[in-house]
Length: 171
Image (cartoon, rainbow, N blue to C red):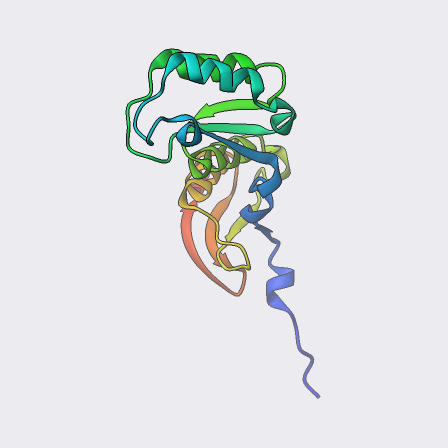
Protein backbone atom coordinates (compact mmCIF):
# COMPACT_ATOMS: atom_id res chain seq x y z
CA UNK A 1 0.00 0.00 0.00
CA UNK A 2 1.39 3.39 -1.03
CA UNK A 3 1.45 6.19 1.51
CA UNK A 4 0.17 9.51 0.26
CA UNK A 5 2.59 12.27 1.18
CA UNK A 6 1.49 15.89 1.18
CA UNK A 7 4.56 17.46 -0.39
CA UNK A 8 2.97 20.93 -0.29
CA UNK A 9 2.62 20.75 3.49
CA UNK A 10 6.22 19.55 3.79
CA UNK A 11 7.58 22.29 1.53
CA UNK A 12 7.63 24.98 4.21
CA UNK A 13 5.75 27.37 1.96
CA UNK A 14 3.79 30.06 3.79
CA UNK A 15 0.59 31.20 2.08
CA UNK A 16 -0.34 34.83 2.58
CA UNK A 17 -3.94 35.77 1.76
CA UNK A 18 -3.94 39.50 0.96
CA UNK A 19 -7.74 39.58 1.17
CA UNK A 20 -7.38 39.66 4.96
CA UNK A 21 -5.88 43.16 4.67
CA UNK A 22 -8.83 44.63 2.74
CA UNK A 23 -10.74 47.14 4.91
CA UNK A 24 -14.32 46.26 5.79
CA UNK A 25 -17.10 48.05 3.91
CA UNK A 26 -18.48 49.59 7.09
CA UNK A 27 -15.12 51.11 8.05
CA UNK A 28 -15.30 53.53 5.10
CA UNK A 29 -17.80 56.34 4.60
CA UNK A 30 -18.26 58.74 1.70
CA UNK A 31 -18.99 62.44 1.82
CA UNK A 32 -20.38 63.35 -1.61
CA UNK A 33 -20.86 66.99 -2.61
CA UNK A 34 -23.60 66.07 -5.09
CA UNK A 35 -26.59 66.49 -2.73
CA UNK A 36 -25.37 69.97 -1.82
CA UNK A 37 -25.13 71.26 -5.39
CA UNK A 38 -27.67 73.59 -6.98
CA UNK A 39 -28.96 71.77 -10.08
CA UNK A 40 -26.04 69.31 -9.64
CA UNK A 41 -23.70 71.99 -10.97
CA UNK A 42 -23.02 74.82 -8.54
CA UNK A 43 -22.01 74.94 -4.91
CA UNK A 44 -23.50 78.06 -3.33
CA UNK A 45 -21.41 79.12 -0.34
CA UNK A 46 -24.26 80.44 1.85
CA UNK A 47 -26.43 77.34 1.25
CA UNK A 48 -23.50 74.98 1.69
CA UNK A 49 -22.50 76.53 5.01
CA UNK A 50 -26.10 76.13 6.20
CA UNK A 51 -26.07 72.47 5.09
CA UNK A 52 -22.81 71.94 6.96
CA UNK A 53 -24.39 73.19 10.21
CA UNK A 54 -27.37 70.83 9.74
CA UNK A 55 -25.27 67.81 8.70
CA UNK A 56 -25.20 64.81 11.09
CA UNK A 57 -21.43 64.44 11.38
CA UNK A 58 -21.69 61.56 13.89
CA UNK A 59 -22.25 59.13 10.99
CA UNK A 60 -18.55 59.58 10.13
CA UNK A 61 -17.25 58.93 13.64
CA UNK A 62 -14.33 56.49 13.70
CA UNK A 63 -14.52 55.85 9.96
CA UNK A 64 -12.17 56.54 7.11
CA UNK A 65 -13.92 59.12 4.95
CA UNK A 66 -13.61 59.67 1.21
CA UNK A 67 -14.55 63.19 0.14
CA UNK A 68 -15.76 63.11 -3.44
CA UNK A 69 -18.18 64.54 -5.95
CA UNK A 70 -20.09 61.99 -8.01
CA UNK A 71 -21.02 64.51 -10.71
CA UNK A 72 -18.67 66.30 -13.05
CA UNK A 73 -18.39 69.84 -11.71
CA UNK A 74 -15.83 72.12 -10.12
CA UNK A 75 -15.80 72.22 -6.33
CA UNK A 76 -14.06 75.17 -4.73
CA UNK A 77 -11.06 74.38 -2.49
CA UNK A 78 -12.61 76.07 0.54
CA UNK A 79 -15.47 73.54 0.38
CA UNK A 80 -13.05 70.61 0.78
CA UNK A 81 -11.44 72.46 3.66
CA UNK A 82 -14.81 73.09 5.32
CA UNK A 83 -15.75 69.41 5.09
CA UNK A 84 -12.33 68.39 6.44
CA UNK A 85 -12.67 70.85 9.32
CA UNK A 86 -15.99 69.25 10.28
CA UNK A 87 -14.60 65.71 9.96
CA UNK A 88 -11.36 66.39 11.85
CA UNK A 89 -11.50 64.76 15.26
CA UNK A 90 -14.37 62.48 14.22
CA UNK A 91 -13.05 60.58 11.22
CA UNK A 92 -10.25 58.04 11.52
CA UNK A 93 -8.74 59.50 8.36
CA UNK A 94 -9.82 61.80 5.56
CA UNK A 95 -9.06 61.24 1.88
CA UNK A 96 -10.00 63.19 -1.23
CA UNK A 97 -11.09 60.74 -3.89
CA UNK A 98 -13.43 57.83 -4.46
CA UNK A 99 -14.34 55.12 -1.97
CA UNK A 100 -12.35 52.66 -4.09
CA UNK A 101 -9.26 54.87 -4.00
CA UNK A 102 -9.52 55.19 -0.22
CA UNK A 103 -10.04 51.44 0.15
CA UNK A 104 -6.91 50.80 -1.94
CA UNK A 105 -4.92 53.31 0.14
CA UNK A 106 -5.96 51.62 3.39
CA UNK A 107 -5.21 48.19 1.88
CA UNK A 108 -1.74 49.34 0.83
CA UNK A 109 -1.10 50.86 4.28
CA UNK A 110 -2.25 47.64 5.98
CA UNK A 111 0.12 45.56 3.85
CA UNK A 112 3.03 47.93 4.41
CA UNK A 113 2.55 47.37 8.15
CA UNK A 114 3.00 43.59 7.88
CA UNK A 115 5.44 42.22 10.43
CA UNK A 116 8.11 41.16 7.94
CA UNK A 117 10.01 39.18 10.57
CA UNK A 118 7.29 36.52 10.24
CA UNK A 119 8.44 36.02 6.62
CA UNK A 120 12.20 36.48 6.86
CA UNK A 121 14.07 33.77 4.90
CA UNK A 122 10.77 31.97 4.19
CA UNK A 123 9.22 30.74 0.99
CA UNK A 124 6.05 32.83 0.58
CA UNK A 125 3.20 32.47 -1.87
CA UNK A 126 0.69 35.28 -2.27
CA UNK A 127 -2.68 33.58 -2.60
CA UNK A 128 -4.04 34.03 -6.09
CA UNK A 129 -7.61 32.73 -5.80
CA UNK A 130 -10.34 33.33 -3.30
CA UNK A 131 -13.86 34.52 -2.64
CA UNK A 132 -12.77 38.16 -2.48
CA UNK A 133 -11.20 39.98 -5.43
CA UNK A 134 -7.88 41.47 -4.34
CA UNK A 135 -6.80 44.60 -6.24
CA UNK A 136 -3.43 44.81 -7.98
CA UNK A 137 -2.24 47.43 -5.48
CA UNK A 138 -2.15 44.71 -2.81
CA UNK A 139 0.17 42.46 -4.79
CA UNK A 140 2.49 45.33 -5.68
CA UNK A 141 2.64 46.51 -2.05
CA UNK A 142 3.24 42.96 -0.77
CA UNK A 143 6.05 42.45 -3.29
CA UNK A 144 7.66 45.71 -2.23
CA UNK A 145 7.44 44.80 1.46
CA UNK A 146 8.37 41.12 1.27
CA UNK A 147 11.03 40.95 -1.46
CA UNK A 148 13.83 42.33 0.74
CA UNK A 149 13.30 39.63 3.41
CA UNK A 150 11.93 36.43 1.85
CA UNK A 151 13.84 33.48 0.46
CA UNK A 152 11.37 33.28 -2.40
CA UNK A 153 8.15 35.00 -3.40
CA UNK A 154 5.50 33.33 -5.51
CA UNK A 155 1.96 33.94 -6.74
CA UNK A 156 -0.86 31.43 -6.90
CA UNK A 157 -1.52 28.40 -4.74
CA UNK A 158 1.11 26.21 -3.02
CA UNK A 159 0.39 23.35 -5.43
CA UNK A 160 0.75 25.59 -8.50
CA UNK A 161 2.80 28.73 -8.12
CA UNK A 162 4.28 31.32 -10.41
CA UNK A 163 7.77 32.30 -9.24
CA UNK A 164 8.19 36.06 -8.79
CA UNK A 165 11.46 36.38 -6.89
CA UNK A 166 14.15 34.08 -5.58
CA UNK A 167 16.87 35.29 -3.25
CA UNK A 168 20.31 34.93 -4.86
CA UNK A 169 22.60 32.28 -3.42
CA UNK A 170 24.92 33.69 -0.80
CA UNK A 171 28.61 33.23 -1.46
